[in-house]
Length: 91
Image (cartoon, rainbow, N blue to C red; front, top):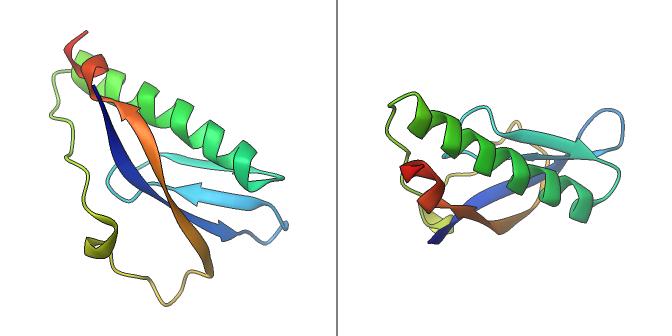
C-alpha cells in the first residue's frame, strides 16, 4: 500500500529543480523540470524504503505537509505529495 510523503521543491544553483524528502533522509533528486525531478524522487524513495527494510531498519512514517517546517535557508518553490510503496518494506 502506498503512503504519501512530502517532497520539497527548490531551485539549485545550476537552475535545475531540486527535490528532497524530509522524512526519508538522503532521498534527493535534481532535473530540468519539476515533473522529471518528482519522478526521480519517487523512484529513489521507493528504492530507499526497500533498502531500509532489506537491511532491517524501520521505515519512517510520513508526516503531514503542515508538520514539516519551512527552512528559511531553502528557496522553496513548492511541495508535492509523492507515493511511496510501503509494501516494499516487507519484501
